[in-house]
Image 1 (tube, each protein chain N blue to C red):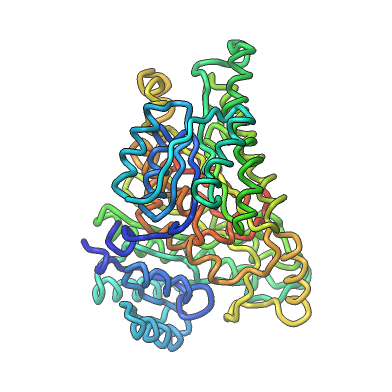
Image 2: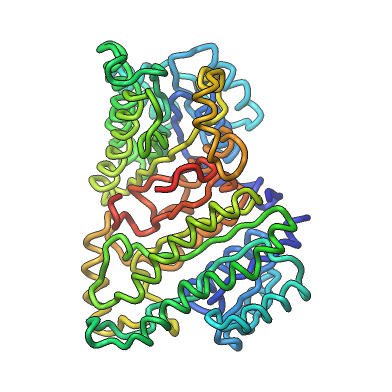
Length: 259
Length: 255
């Protein structure tokens, strides 16, 4: 039902936004939309070539953009990502903590120690570090909004995906912690919970017939999630339209999960 | 069909939160029909929206009365076109806070009938048209007091708002394959002057202070805090969201 009043929105004019994991998928789409709505956008990711491609797409918006190669599991890397964003663009108002890593088809017995540690390091600690370093900068800029990418796997079961489920469950609790602890300093924190979404990262899931069927059956709306569905919700949560929402999770999966 | 022709009905739209939802939806390009038991209020309110440049009409309806609902929605569809948006906002507590021993069963039935029955009847009225159009947006209004089970003294209201959540989930499941999304907004304590208001005077003042303190954001919620979420759930941005309850309460419910 889109039309001109909505498509011409500029809700993030003069705002500085960081999106992690923005070299592809959901992060790329949210970066694109933030830029289209007037923001200065930092594309943060380990994948430099994907990051440069994202910047190309953002060129249409004619707003300021920057790629900062970042390892979200490394405190030094995240700290300097935020410092660089603040230095170049003069402040920080929004961070979308979206980067993750997780091996597929691993129940707890099958998950190696290294796989567990790496999943937590990128998917959960990455969100912790993003919040930890962004919060002082956002407060110094007069307040703003944090949106974390959770998952329906943090709410209900995804078969043989144990480390991912644990990490995403942690992301949702962390979201509530940040919301509660920093509300008085003008920061809201919410999470999106995508179901299976069509991105490069989920191609292995789509290629696995059993996993694909498990995820796609019982979607009431008869299609897979797209990055556009997730990005629209991220921008809503980050915007003034959601100014009285904090500590919440929004499940976006075509009605497969009701919780 | 262009946005300009898309008709949304807001029940309880003549006053309080419903009027603010209608105003915002009008600004987003919807043709809004304000349906209210206080017909005169609905008509006056619709006029103020039209004068501000929107397309709006007001009608009288008793959402707890099957005949009133059937008749009114039939007229709306005839006069304005297929209804593809519905905000089931009509409702409220209506009965002064009291313990269950001091309430009448009729009070319970009445509160259920307006809040939950009204949601059921109005949804039933719009579904055939939405199915024919192969699209629809339904937003129901629950309350975060459902998660808390309080304040004390409001059993019928909390029960009814729980029923609204059940309706939301079941309708989402039933109507999803037809391209209709059904979600609920759960406001926190948002004092407004409407027919359903029961917390007044000292009790209201105490609630304001206590609840604002318990929220993450320490101030009393206003209608303006809710309109963005209702508009989001009525827009294309939420086409993949269904069966969900969105708490808009300044972080009062921590789950």
